[in-house]
Image (cartoon, rainbow, N blue to C red; front, side, top):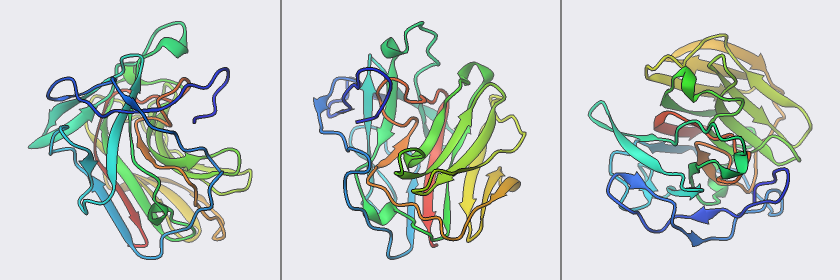
Length: 258
């Protein structure tokens, strides 16, 4: 369960789709993962995970290996839609909520299952996605892709487009208090598709936009990322305060030691 101010709301796995092309919000309950409670391992071999969303929504969304599935979760009527993108499809997230009470906002994300093989530990790491946003989609929090949390000693890797400037940023955190963030002064919320990549090498974290390195920060070689959380696309959960993404996402990928 996501730890948020006030009463925590449960996460729901969506098992029924209301209509073709829409990922709905009528759900069967599935027990959420509690951060930091389970013993976790790290990847022992190279990992390559990719999602292009071109196979529709009538089944769990699988990566190219067929092993790592994503399922839609939502609250308050939040829905994900499939939209054309090039020769394929992309996922469109709920519009930016302007309600006075965040607890009533529609929310929807994609979430995987716990999988220790997706924990990079100290290994080289690449992850990212293609996104399309406008300034109307921006907010203080807009998480594109993540595993874990940056607080509470859980550890994390994350890609986000936070705040009103439209700057993408890459974040990693180990089990110590410090958070490492690389953020270029580049606005990607221009209504165009952009490929965003976060790249962690032995001692550096870099942000790439459309294949070009635009910012980087040093990180300690000893920093290890390993947590009991699933992959999440579009937010850190479906509950209130989830840093909901608004806009479109496609071509999500994760590479560990590859």
